[in-house]
Amino acid sequence: MSGTGLPAGWAVAEIGEVAEVSGGIQKQPKRRPVRHSYPFLRVANVGRGSLDLEELHEIELFDGELERYRLAKGDLLVVEGNGSPDQIGRAATWRGAIPNTVHQNHLIRVRPMKILSARFLELLWNAPDVARQLKEVAQSTSGLYTLTTSKIKRVRVPLPPLAEQHRIVEVLEGHLSHLDHAQSSVSHAQQWIFSGRRSMLAEVRGRALRSGGRPLPLGSVAETSLGKMLDAQKNIGIQTPYLRNINVRWGSFDLSDISNVPIPPENLRRYTVSPGDLLVCEGGEPGRCAIWPGSKQSMAYQKALHRVRAKGAVSLRWIALMLEESVRNHRISHLITGTTIKHLPQEKLRRIEIPIPSRRVQEQLLDVMSSHDQYFLRLEDATVKASQQATHLRQAIIHQAMAGQLVPQDPTDEPAVVLLDRIRAERAAAQAAAKPKRAARRTVPKQATPSPAGPPPPTTTTPLPATAVQQELPL
Image (cartoon, rainbow, N blue to C red):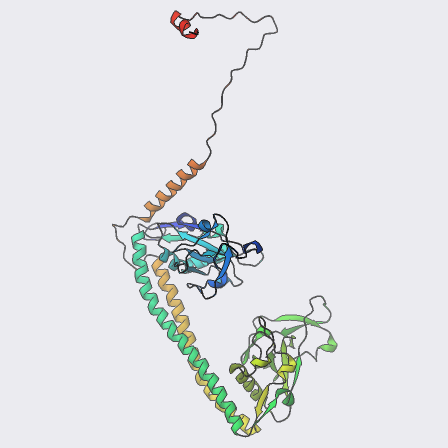
Protein backbone atom coordinates (compact mmCIF):
# COMPACT_ATOMS: atom_id res chain seq x y z
CA MET A 1 0.00 0.00 0.00
CA SER A 2 1.09 3.56 -0.70
CA GLY A 3 0.92 6.50 1.70
CA THR A 4 -2.65 7.16 0.58
CA GLY A 5 -3.79 3.73 1.70
CA LEU A 6 -4.12 2.64 -1.92
CA PRO A 7 -2.13 -0.12 -3.62
CA ALA A 8 1.24 0.62 -5.20
CA GLY A 9 0.83 1.94 -8.71
CA TRP A 10 -2.39 3.76 -7.88
CA ALA A 11 -2.75 7.54 -7.69
CA VAL A 12 -5.25 10.06 -6.38
CA ALA A 13 -6.43 12.67 -8.88
CA GLU A 14 -9.02 15.36 -9.18
CA ILE A 15 -11.70 14.80 -11.81
CA GLY A 16 -10.52 17.92 -13.61
CA GLU A 17 -7.11 16.29 -14.16
CA VAL A 18 -8.42 13.10 -15.79
CA ALA A 19 -11.57 14.31 -17.56
CA GLU A 20 -12.92 17.29 -19.48
CA VAL A 21 -15.80 18.84 -17.55
CA SER A 22 -18.22 21.15 -19.35
CA GLY A 23 -21.77 22.49 -19.25
CA GLY A 24 -24.53 22.33 -21.84
CA ILE A 25 -27.02 24.48 -23.72
CA GLN A 26 -29.61 26.69 -22.07
CA LYS A 27 -33.05 26.36 -23.59
CA GLN A 28 -34.23 29.76 -24.86
CA PRO A 29 -36.95 31.01 -27.24
CA LYS A 30 -34.36 31.61 -29.97
CA ARG A 31 -33.51 27.90 -29.84
CA ARG A 32 -36.94 26.73 -30.96
CA PRO A 33 -36.17 24.01 -33.55
CA VAL A 34 -36.61 25.49 -37.03
CA ARG A 35 -33.80 24.81 -39.51
CA HIS A 36 -30.91 23.16 -37.67
CA SER A 37 -32.60 21.07 -34.97
CA TYR A 38 -30.85 18.31 -33.04
CA PRO A 39 -31.82 15.82 -30.29
CA PHE A 40 -31.66 17.49 -26.86
CA LEU A 41 -31.02 15.52 -23.67
CA ARG A 42 -32.63 16.96 -20.51
CA VAL A 43 -32.49 16.28 -16.77
CA ALA A 44 -35.72 14.28 -17.08
CA ASN A 45 -33.91 11.80 -19.36
CA VAL A 46 -31.13 11.00 -16.86
CA GLY A 47 -31.64 8.44 -14.12
CA ARG A 48 -29.12 6.91 -11.77
CA GLY A 49 -27.12 4.67 -14.08
CA SER A 50 -29.71 4.70 -16.87
CA LEU A 51 -31.11 6.95 -19.60
CA ASP A 52 -34.77 7.26 -20.60
CA LEU A 53 -34.83 8.15 -24.30
CA GLU A 54 -38.56 7.61 -24.84
CA GLU A 55 -39.26 11.34 -24.98
CA LEU A 56 -36.39 13.31 -26.45
CA HIS A 57 -36.83 17.02 -27.25
CA GLU A 58 -35.09 18.95 -30.04
CA ILE A 59 -33.21 22.25 -30.02
CA GLU A 60 -31.87 24.70 -32.59
CA LEU A 61 -28.08 24.93 -32.94
CA PHE A 62 -26.00 27.65 -34.55
CA ASP A 63 -22.63 27.67 -36.32
CA GLY A 64 -19.95 25.65 -34.54
CA GLU A 65 -22.19 24.55 -31.64
CA LEU A 66 -22.67 20.96 -32.75
CA GLU A 67 -18.96 20.22 -32.51
CA ARG A 68 -18.78 21.93 -29.13
CA TYR A 69 -21.77 20.25 -27.48
CA ARG A 70 -22.15 16.93 -29.32
CA LEU A 71 -22.11 13.98 -26.92
CA ALA A 72 -19.53 11.27 -27.45
CA LYS A 73 -19.78 7.65 -26.45
CA GLY A 74 -18.51 7.32 -22.87
CA ASP A 75 -19.53 10.81 -21.69
CA LEU A 76 -20.87 10.79 -18.15
CA LEU A 77 -23.89 13.08 -17.73
CA VAL A 78 -24.29 14.45 -14.20
CA VAL A 79 -27.45 16.16 -12.98
CA GLU A 80 -26.56 19.63 -11.75
CA GLY A 81 -29.02 19.99 -8.89
CA ASN A 82 -31.72 18.27 -6.91
CA GLY A 83 -33.92 19.07 -3.94
CA SER A 84 -32.89 15.85 -2.21
CA PRO A 85 -29.27 15.53 -1.00
CA ASP A 86 -29.45 11.78 -1.58
CA GLN A 87 -30.04 12.40 -5.30
CA ILE A 88 -27.13 14.79 -5.79
CA GLY A 89 -24.82 13.78 -8.62
CA ARG A 90 -27.28 11.39 -10.26
CA ALA A 91 -25.51 10.32 -13.44
CA ALA A 92 -25.56 7.99 -16.43
CA THR A 93 -23.20 7.27 -19.31
CA TRP A 94 -24.05 8.20 -22.90
CA ARG A 95 -23.54 5.16 -25.11
CA GLY A 96 -24.15 6.81 -28.47
CA ALA A 97 -27.72 5.58 -29.01
CA ILE A 98 -28.74 8.63 -31.08
CA PRO A 99 -26.23 10.49 -33.31
CA ASN A 100 -25.60 14.23 -32.96
CA THR A 101 -27.27 14.54 -29.56
CA VAL A 102 -26.53 17.56 -27.35
CA HIS A 103 -27.33 18.22 -23.70
CA GLN A 104 -29.03 20.74 -21.46
CA ASN A 105 -27.14 23.26 -19.33
CA HIS A 106 -28.48 21.56 -16.18
CA LEU A 107 -26.49 18.47 -17.15
CA ILE A 108 -22.73 18.53 -16.66
CA ARG A 109 -20.70 16.50 -19.16
CA VAL A 110 -17.69 14.60 -17.81
CA ARG A 111 -15.62 13.25 -20.69
CA PRO A 112 -12.84 10.89 -19.48
CA MET A 113 -9.35 11.17 -20.93
CA LYS A 114 -7.38 8.14 -22.12
CA ILE A 115 -6.06 7.60 -18.61
CA LEU A 116 -9.59 6.82 -17.35
CA SER A 117 -11.96 4.08 -18.53
CA ALA A 118 -15.50 5.41 -19.16
CA ARG A 119 -17.13 2.38 -17.54
CA PHE A 120 -14.76 2.59 -14.56
CA LEU A 121 -15.73 6.25 -14.16
CA GLU A 122 -19.43 5.36 -14.12
CA LEU A 123 -18.91 2.68 -11.47
CA LEU A 124 -16.60 4.98 -9.53
CA TRP A 125 -19.30 7.65 -9.50
CA ASN A 126 -21.50 5.34 -7.41
CA ALA A 127 -18.81 4.73 -4.80
CA PRO A 128 -19.75 5.91 -1.27
CA ASP A 129 -16.72 8.22 -1.02
CA VAL A 130 -17.57 10.04 -4.27
CA ALA A 131 -21.22 10.35 -3.20
CA ARG A 132 -20.06 11.89 0.09
CA GLN A 133 -17.82 14.41 -1.69
CA LEU A 134 -20.57 15.39 -4.12
CA LYS A 135 -22.96 16.04 -1.25
CA GLU A 136 -20.33 18.16 0.53
CA VAL A 137 -19.43 20.35 -2.45
CA ALA A 138 -23.06 20.67 -3.58
CA GLN A 139 -24.39 22.10 -0.33
CA SER A 140 -24.90 25.87 -0.20
CA THR A 141 -25.71 28.35 2.54
CA SER A 142 -29.25 28.74 1.18
CA GLY A 143 -29.97 25.06 1.81
CA LEU A 144 -30.12 24.17 -1.90
CA TYR A 145 -27.93 21.49 -3.43
CA THR A 146 -26.30 22.31 -6.75
CA LEU A 147 -23.22 21.19 -8.63
CA THR A 148 -21.10 23.23 -11.02
CA THR A 149 -18.30 22.32 -13.38
CA SER A 150 -15.74 23.81 -10.98
CA LYS A 151 -17.13 21.79 -8.05
CA ILE A 152 -17.04 18.53 -9.99
CA LYS A 153 -13.48 19.21 -11.14
CA ARG A 154 -12.38 19.30 -7.47
CA VAL A 155 -13.76 15.86 -6.59
CA ARG A 156 -10.84 13.53 -5.77
CA VAL A 157 -10.92 9.92 -6.97
CA PRO A 158 -8.65 6.87 -6.72
CA LEU A 159 -6.95 6.06 -10.01
CA PRO A 160 -5.61 2.54 -10.70
CA PRO A 161 -3.43 1.74 -13.70
CA LEU A 162 -5.54 1.66 -16.85
CA ALA A 163 -5.12 -2.11 -17.30
CA GLU A 164 -6.29 -2.69 -13.74
CA GLN A 165 -9.30 -0.45 -14.33
CA HIS A 166 -10.43 -2.85 -17.06
CA ARG A 167 -9.92 -5.88 -14.78
CA ILE A 168 -11.91 -4.20 -11.99
CA VAL A 169 -14.76 -3.40 -14.37
CA GLU A 170 -14.93 -7.00 -15.60
CA VAL A 171 -15.08 -8.52 -12.10
CA LEU A 172 -17.30 -5.79 -10.65
CA GLU A 173 -19.87 -6.06 -13.44
CA GLY A 174 -20.14 -9.79 -12.77
CA HIS A 175 -20.97 -9.19 -9.10
CA LEU A 176 -23.36 -6.34 -9.89
CA SER A 177 -25.24 -8.38 -12.49
CA HIS A 178 -26.08 -10.95 -9.79
CA LEU A 179 -27.29 -8.15 -7.52
CA ASP A 180 -29.33 -6.66 -10.37
CA HIS A 181 -30.99 -10.02 -10.90
CA ALA A 182 -31.78 -10.30 -7.19
CA GLN A 183 -33.14 -6.75 -7.10
CA SER A 184 -35.32 -7.51 -10.13
CA SER A 185 -36.77 -10.51 -8.30
CA VAL A 186 -37.51 -8.31 -5.28
CA SER A 187 -39.26 -5.77 -7.52
CA HIS A 188 -41.39 -8.50 -9.07
CA ALA A 189 -42.31 -9.72 -5.60
CA GLN A 190 -43.32 -6.20 -4.54
CA GLN A 191 -45.48 -5.84 -7.65
CA TRP A 192 -47.09 -9.19 -6.91
CA ILE A 193 -47.88 -8.09 -3.34
CA PHE A 194 -49.45 -4.86 -4.60
CA SER A 195 -51.50 -6.69 -7.25
CA GLY A 196 -52.52 -9.38 -4.76
CA ARG A 197 -53.77 -6.86 -2.21
CA ARG A 198 -55.61 -4.90 -4.89
CA SER A 199 -57.33 -8.11 -6.03
CA MET A 200 -58.23 -8.93 -2.44
CA LEU A 201 -59.76 -5.48 -1.97
CA ALA A 202 -61.92 -6.05 -5.07
CA GLU A 203 -62.96 -9.46 -3.73
CA VAL A 204 -64.06 -7.92 -0.42
CA ARG A 205 -66.12 -5.33 -2.27
CA GLY A 206 -67.71 -8.09 -4.36
CA ARG A 207 -68.64 -10.05 -1.23
CA ALA A 208 -70.22 -6.94 0.27
CA LEU A 209 -72.39 -6.48 -2.82
CA ARG A 210 -73.36 -10.17 -2.85
CA SER A 211 -74.29 -9.89 0.82
CA GLY A 212 -76.92 -7.30 0.05
CA GLY A 213 -74.83 -4.18 0.38
CA ARG A 214 -76.28 -1.32 -1.66
CA PRO A 215 -73.84 1.17 -3.28
CA LEU A 216 -74.50 4.53 -1.62
CA PRO A 217 -72.83 7.91 -2.10
CA LEU A 218 -70.28 8.65 0.61
CA GLY A 219 -72.09 11.90 1.39
CA SER A 220 -75.19 9.96 2.45
CA VAL A 221 -73.37 7.84 5.06
CA ALA A 222 -70.73 10.29 6.35
CA GLU A 223 -70.10 13.96 7.07
CA THR A 224 -67.21 15.60 5.23
CA SER A 225 -65.43 18.91 5.72
CA LEU A 226 -62.27 20.62 4.46
CA GLY A 227 -59.55 21.86 6.76
CA LYS A 228 -57.98 25.24 7.47
CA MET A 229 -56.47 27.24 4.61
CA LEU A 230 -52.99 28.45 5.62
CA ASP A 231 -52.66 32.21 5.22
CA ALA A 232 -49.00 33.23 5.43
CA GLN A 233 -50.00 36.93 5.59
CA LYS A 234 -51.98 36.55 8.82
CA ASN A 235 -50.55 35.55 12.15
CA ILE A 236 -53.63 35.86 14.32
CA GLY A 237 -54.59 33.09 16.72
CA ILE A 238 -53.04 30.23 18.61
CA GLN A 239 -50.11 28.46 16.94
CA THR A 240 -51.53 24.97 16.48
CA PRO A 241 -49.86 21.87 14.95
CA TYR A 242 -51.69 20.85 11.81
CA LEU A 243 -51.68 17.86 9.47
CA ARG A 244 -50.87 18.29 5.80
CA ASN A 245 -51.24 16.14 2.74
CA ILE A 246 -47.67 14.84 3.11
CA ASN A 247 -48.40 13.53 6.63
CA VAL A 248 -51.08 11.09 5.43
CA ARG A 249 -50.03 7.64 4.25
CA TRP A 250 -52.22 4.69 3.37
CA GLY A 251 -53.54 3.54 6.74
CA SER A 252 -51.01 5.53 8.83
CA PHE A 253 -49.48 8.94 9.50
CA ASP A 254 -45.93 10.25 9.11
CA LEU A 255 -45.43 12.84 11.86
CA SER A 256 -41.73 13.53 11.23
CA ASP A 257 -42.51 16.94 9.71
CA ILE A 258 -45.32 18.82 11.47
CA SER A 259 -45.93 22.53 10.90
CA ASN A 260 -47.93 25.07 12.93
CA VAL A 261 -50.72 27.37 11.81
CA PRO A 262 -52.26 30.31 13.70
CA ILE A 263 -55.93 29.54 14.38
CA PRO A 264 -58.27 31.94 16.22
CA PRO A 265 -59.66 30.38 19.43
CA GLU A 266 -63.21 30.42 18.07
CA ASN A 267 -62.14 28.23 15.12
CA LEU A 268 -60.05 25.68 17.01
CA ARG A 269 -62.89 23.23 17.47
CA ARG A 270 -63.93 23.51 13.85
CA TYR A 271 -60.49 22.60 12.47
CA THR A 272 -59.37 20.09 15.12
CA VAL A 273 -59.24 16.38 14.40
CA SER A 274 -60.47 13.86 16.95
CA PRO A 275 -59.38 10.24 17.47
CA GLY A 276 -61.26 8.10 14.97
CA ASP A 277 -61.60 10.79 12.29
CA LEU A 278 -60.81 9.66 8.76
CA LEU A 279 -58.54 12.07 6.85
CA VAL A 280 -58.62 11.84 3.05
CA CYS A 281 -56.14 13.55 0.72
CA GLU A 282 -57.73 16.12 -1.58
CA GLY A 283 -54.62 16.43 -3.77
CA GLY A 284 -51.35 14.65 -4.52
CA GLU A 285 -52.71 11.10 -4.56
CA PRO A 286 -56.41 11.92 -4.18
CA GLY A 287 -58.25 9.49 -1.94
CA ARG A 288 -55.24 8.35 0.10
CA CYS A 289 -56.58 8.08 3.63
CA ALA A 290 -55.95 7.04 7.23
CA ILE A 291 -57.85 7.08 10.54
CA TRP A 292 -56.38 9.52 13.08
CA PRO A 293 -55.33 7.61 16.25
CA GLY A 294 -55.12 10.75 18.40
CA SER A 295 -52.21 12.61 20.00
CA LYS A 296 -51.26 14.30 23.26
CA GLN A 297 -51.81 17.78 21.82
CA SER A 298 -54.57 19.28 19.71
CA MET A 299 -54.06 18.77 16.00
CA ALA A 300 -55.68 20.75 13.18
CA TYR A 301 -55.79 19.83 9.50
CA GLN A 302 -55.18 21.87 6.35
CA LYS A 303 -57.52 22.52 3.45
CA ALA A 304 -55.82 19.88 1.29
CA LEU A 305 -57.39 17.24 3.56
CA HIS A 306 -60.99 16.09 3.96
CA ARG A 307 -62.20 15.10 7.41
CA VAL A 308 -64.76 12.27 7.25
CA ARG A 309 -67.01 11.25 10.15
CA ALA A 310 -69.39 8.31 9.80
CA LYS A 311 -73.05 8.60 10.62
CA GLY A 312 -75.51 5.80 11.20
CA ALA A 313 -74.64 2.09 11.26
CA VAL A 314 -71.48 2.40 9.16
CA SER A 315 -67.97 1.58 10.35
CA LEU A 316 -65.40 4.25 9.55
CA ARG A 317 -62.88 1.46 9.03
CA TRP A 318 -65.20 0.07 6.35
CA ILE A 319 -65.43 3.45 4.65
CA ALA A 320 -61.62 3.75 4.68
CA LEU A 321 -61.23 0.26 3.22
CA MET A 322 -63.74 0.88 0.43
CA LEU A 323 -62.15 4.26 -0.35
CA GLU A 324 -58.81 2.51 -0.79
CA GLU A 325 -60.42 -0.12 -3.00
CA SER A 326 -61.98 2.62 -5.14
CA VAL A 327 -58.59 4.34 -5.59
CA ARG A 328 -56.53 1.18 -6.16
CA ASN A 329 -58.94 -0.18 -8.77
CA HIS A 330 -59.46 3.19 -10.50
CA ARG A 331 -63.17 3.49 -9.73
CA ILE A 332 -62.94 7.22 -9.04
CA SER A 333 -60.78 8.33 -11.98
CA HIS A 334 -63.76 10.15 -13.53
CA LEU A 335 -64.12 12.23 -10.34
CA ILE A 336 -60.51 13.44 -10.27
CA THR A 337 -59.86 16.95 -11.64
CA GLY A 338 -56.63 18.50 -12.90
CA THR A 339 -53.81 17.08 -15.00
CA THR A 340 -50.43 18.07 -13.57
CA ILE A 341 -51.76 18.36 -10.02
CA LYS A 342 -54.76 16.15 -9.38
CA HIS A 343 -57.58 17.01 -6.98
CA LEU A 344 -60.60 15.35 -5.41
CA PRO A 345 -63.01 18.20 -4.58
CA GLN A 346 -65.39 17.75 -1.67
CA GLU A 347 -68.50 17.51 -3.85
CA LYS A 348 -66.79 14.73 -5.87
CA LEU A 349 -65.68 12.92 -2.71
CA ARG A 350 -69.30 12.80 -1.55
CA ARG A 351 -70.33 11.17 -4.83
CA ILE A 352 -68.04 8.13 -4.44
CA GLU A 353 -70.26 5.05 -4.18
CA ILE A 354 -69.54 2.64 -1.34
CA PRO A 355 -71.35 -0.69 -0.85
CA ILE A 356 -72.95 -0.70 2.60
CA PRO A 357 -73.86 -4.20 3.85
CA SER A 358 -75.07 -4.86 7.40
CA ARG A 359 -72.77 -3.90 10.25
CA ARG A 360 -72.18 -7.60 10.98
CA VAL A 361 -71.03 -8.26 7.39
CA GLN A 362 -68.82 -5.14 7.49
CA GLU A 363 -67.00 -6.49 10.57
CA GLN A 364 -66.66 -9.97 9.07
CA LEU A 365 -65.15 -8.62 5.85
CA LEU A 366 -62.84 -6.28 7.77
CA ASP A 367 -61.53 -9.31 9.70
CA VAL A 368 -60.98 -11.21 6.43
CA MET A 369 -59.01 -8.29 4.98
CA SER A 370 -57.02 -7.88 8.20
CA SER A 371 -55.88 -11.52 8.13
CA HIS A 372 -54.73 -11.18 4.52
CA ASP A 373 -53.01 -7.87 5.35
CA GLN A 374 -50.86 -9.61 7.96
CA TYR A 375 -49.67 -11.99 5.26
CA PHE A 376 -49.02 -9.14 2.80
CA LEU A 377 -47.15 -7.13 5.44
CA ARG A 378 -44.83 -10.04 6.26
CA LEU A 379 -44.00 -10.42 2.57
CA GLU A 380 -43.50 -6.67 2.19
CA ASP A 381 -41.15 -6.53 5.19
CA ALA A 382 -39.11 -9.37 3.68
CA THR A 383 -38.81 -7.59 0.32
CA VAL A 384 -37.82 -4.31 1.97
CA LYS A 385 -35.07 -6.04 3.98
CA ALA A 386 -33.85 -7.87 0.87
CA SER A 387 -33.73 -4.61 -1.09
CA GLN A 388 -31.80 -2.87 1.70
CA GLN A 389 -29.32 -5.74 1.92
CA ALA A 390 -28.78 -5.63 -1.84
CA THR A 391 -28.11 -1.88 -1.67
CA HIS A 392 -25.62 -2.25 1.19
CA LEU A 393 -23.88 -5.15 -0.55
CA ARG A 394 -23.62 -3.13 -3.76
CA GLN A 395 -21.99 -0.24 -1.91
CA ALA A 396 -19.62 -2.58 -0.08
CA ILE A 397 -18.47 -4.27 -3.31
CA ILE A 398 -17.93 -0.93 -5.07
CA HIS A 399 -16.03 0.40 -2.05
CA GLN A 400 -13.86 -2.73 -2.04
CA ALA A 401 -13.16 -2.29 -5.76
CA MET A 402 -12.19 1.36 -5.38
CA ALA A 403 -9.86 0.52 -2.51
CA GLY A 404 -7.89 -1.94 -4.68
CA GLN A 405 -9.16 -5.03 -2.85
CA LEU A 406 -11.26 -6.65 -5.57
CA VAL A 407 -8.61 -7.82 -8.05
CA PRO A 408 -4.88 -8.52 -7.60
CA GLN A 409 -2.37 -5.94 -8.82
CA ASP A 410 -0.02 -6.68 -11.73
CA PRO A 411 3.47 -5.21 -11.21
CA THR A 412 3.93 -4.99 -14.99
CA ASP A 413 1.11 -2.43 -15.32
CA GLU A 414 2.28 1.08 -16.00
CA PRO A 415 1.66 2.96 -12.72
CA ALA A 416 -1.17 5.48 -12.81
CA VAL A 417 1.05 8.07 -11.15
CA VAL A 418 3.40 7.95 -14.16
CA LEU A 419 0.53 8.58 -16.57
CA LEU A 420 -0.86 11.30 -14.30
CA ASP A 421 2.51 13.07 -14.06
CA ARG A 422 2.79 12.93 -17.85
CA ILE A 423 -0.65 14.51 -18.25
CA ARG A 424 0.20 17.21 -15.71
CA ALA A 425 3.46 17.99 -17.51
CA GLU A 426 1.77 18.14 -20.91
CA ARG A 427 -0.93 20.41 -19.54
CA ALA A 428 1.61 22.73 -17.92
CA ALA A 429 3.58 22.91 -21.19
CA ALA A 430 0.42 23.67 -23.17
CA GLN A 431 -0.56 26.43 -20.76
CA ALA A 432 2.91 27.92 -20.94
CA ALA A 433 2.87 27.85 -24.76
CA ALA A 434 -0.56 29.50 -24.79
CA LYS A 435 0.68 32.55 -22.84
CA PRO A 436 1.51 35.51 -25.18
CA LYS A 437 5.23 36.25 -25.25
CA ARG A 438 6.15 39.68 -24.06
CA ALA A 439 7.93 41.83 -26.65
CA ALA A 440 11.55 42.57 -25.70
CA ARG A 441 11.96 46.12 -24.48
CA ARG A 442 14.27 48.42 -26.47
CA THR A 443 16.72 50.30 -24.35
CA VAL A 444 17.23 53.83 -25.73
CA PRO A 445 20.34 55.52 -24.31
CA LYS A 446 19.64 58.82 -22.71
CA GLN A 447 21.26 61.91 -24.31
CA ALA A 448 23.85 63.66 -22.23
CA THR A 449 22.52 66.70 -20.45
CA PRO A 450 24.76 69.79 -20.76
CA SER A 451 26.39 70.81 -17.52
CA PRO A 452 25.19 74.14 -16.27
CA ALA A 453 28.77 75.09 -15.51
CA GLY A 454 29.73 75.51 -19.20
CA PRO A 455 29.60 74.02 -22.69
CA PRO A 456 29.90 70.24 -23.14
CA PRO A 457 33.37 68.89 -23.62
CA PRO A 458 34.45 68.29 -27.23
CA THR A 459 33.69 64.84 -28.64
CA THR A 460 36.69 62.78 -29.64
CA THR A 461 36.10 60.68 -32.74
CA THR A 462 38.21 57.66 -33.50
CA PRO A 463 38.97 57.59 -37.24
CA LEU A 464 37.69 54.53 -39.12
CA PRO A 465 40.02 52.38 -41.12
CA ALA A 466 40.15 53.11 -44.83
CA THR A 467 38.31 49.90 -45.69
CA ALA A 468 35.54 50.78 -43.31
CA VAL A 469 35.25 54.26 -44.85
CA GLN A 470 35.00 52.77 -48.29
CA GLN A 471 32.20 50.46 -47.11
CA GLU A 472 30.27 53.43 -45.69
CA LEU A 473 30.56 55.55 -48.89
CA PRO A 474 27.88 55.08 -51.54
CA LEU A 475 29.02 53.51 -54.74
